Amino acid sequence: MKKNYVILSLLILAGLEAPSAAAQDKVIAPSMVTIKGGEFMMGSLANPKDPDFPISEPMHPVRITSFRLSRYETTVGQFRQFVEATGYQATGDCWKLAANDWGMEVGKTGWDAPVNAPTDYHPVLCVSWNDAQAYLAWLSKQTGKHYRLPSEAEWEYAARAGGKGRYPFGDDPAALCKYGNVFDRSGKAAIARLTGKTREEIHCDDGAELTTVVGMYAPNAFGLHDMLGNVGEFVEDCQHLNYEGAPGDGSAWTNACPAWHGSAMVIHRGGSYNNAAVGVSPTYRGHAGKDNRSSVGEGFRIAETIAGDVDQRAGKRNMAKKTAEKTVAPTAFETGLAAAQTAERARRSASAVKPQ
Image 1: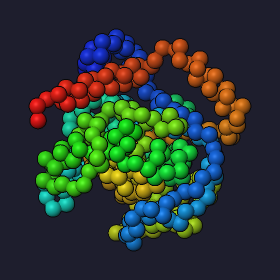
Image 2: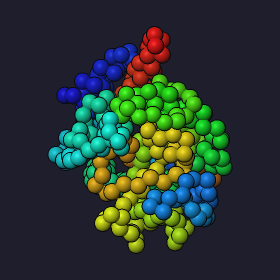
Image 3: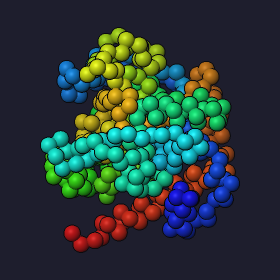
Image 4: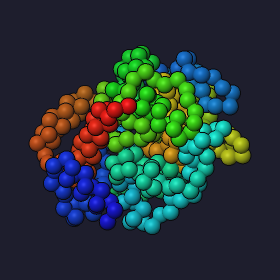
């Protein structure tokens, strides 16, 4: 009932007709983008270097085979459907922002708490790498597709989208607010209230304080939203502290995983609402334990294996198909997302005109 109420409320606010209950009961299939394969130089020499933190060196050539990647980060509503269908318990400690020396602490606030899930169209937080794997196994079984996490190489290739600069759109951090939910002026003010701490922000302002509805920002050249910021995204690979010995074929690096404080770690990419300019570089690497849950920055995005590679003729056929699909009625998810985005734009606009 909670999910239906949220969706209905958002649709009414946006002046849209609510989808039928039957449509809402269907498995929420992700909106996928086909990423044409190619070669690129993975990594960067410009990121910070820490012997206890994964670095992005050495730079090395990687060949990516075509695959599909979700247009959006996995949402609260998508994950909720899995939990309600299976009874899965994504419970346990979750990191949250707090007013202490670290600026965060472990608490019992879960993925579906209002503070973490303002709407069904926010990215899901407080889920671990293990939780993501369980969801993807269920989704694959329900749909007959091979859904999975992207490899780290696939993720970086997709995030860079052919760009050669510091970011996919160029080198100026001040432009990040157009492309992602990052630690900007609004984020700085909100996080300072919660933690009592302050630091240098990105000098732009999008009106979002913590996480926000997916798809609110301009897509990259591959049509992917929120690859930078909002939530960091788990990938399939375990943590290796550098790229020495990394696969060159775009596959996930899941062998010879070194222990870190007693257990293997995994990688997440893209940074979050809590990251400034360095942390949201498409080459920057984050890490977490497989069972780590956090509202400070980790979620995930869905990848899909496809047969063979995509050639130019197939690419042209896909473009023709996309043109034809513009006349097809949107799915219940797309309709609900459009309403949630409209509501979020209205909230930001109202907030912007309030006296300070």
